[in-house]
Image (tube, rainbow, N blue to C red):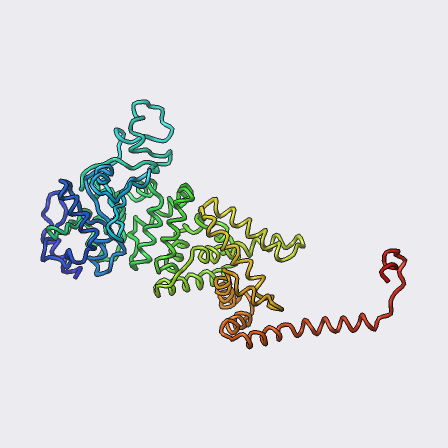
Length: 472
């Protein structure tokens, strides 16, 4: 299908320099029926209000490739304030890059205003003292390294297309006339399975270093390769990722590892040295012991992919617990040299790793607390005597801790056996569970009885302590 459409584009390649390649109705397989009702209503209402409006970006790309879009985005020449006036159930979000979330029934449609290029007339640098430019700071602002701190300069559709990140995301589709507009010659790149950034790659990465993460995420998800210049620029600018606010990076990490292609994404992140910037302590542990630690993370991400593709729930707490476990184990070795108890050592290591990681990626407390509980359960799960096994089963983190234990056994960190015991314990009835616990207690009880017999047969030693004499 893509080759057929590409041939049509080649025949229609006589358009003016600023005009897009256009596929009219009948020249492609898209139709308004494939668009969600909410997205269609948003486009229709904007059009009826006198504005331009198109479905844009990844949703059009996915439909062109025969994939089902996860969501639908709309681009328009209406400003965020004008969009908000048009839709009662809407709100403007974002400060750096203002967008409008429009709710249509259960759907939330993301509406963006056409962006324009930044220049000296409408863009200022962070810390600039020119008073004449102060009025533009709310619209456009750059850091000293060239990163866009404000990006709210609005323009036309062709300017907007040139401001988009990759050629495969510069497609615009209007359900009314059923036409597809390709402003960046993205169809040949899709046909050749290439991810190509629009414009100068190094400059575009400096504007927003998160584009490097998006490039790798798309490569993993679609099975595409990075175009040579697009890839080469990452090696020059990858350290700029450390300048991204930690809170924004948390959201980006979830997109990277919770879309069903976490393992492929992880390999690409390591290949382009972005993992070193995102998880420096884990990267250091991997360089020190690339054997077990690498196997552990790969298996954890494989399991994550399987669960997500099976529509099963995956909590970010478990994901981060796995990604940071190598760092915890290495830090644990440092604290264990002080001779403290294993529980205290683990708590100290967990606190150290979590604090440092949150300086790079702002993991919310609602995830760091269960993450640390998963780690601490690794010391509690071997203790099953008495009522401990029953109490552990009631722990709200038990299942996550149990899965983490199985992962450690599967990758060879600890010997197998304990995980099977807990598997059987969960499946057993009350009577069987009591028997299993008694078997765990036997060696300990035998030892206690032996010690008691020794105390009975031993002769009492005279004591010179007055307090002991009174008790005697």
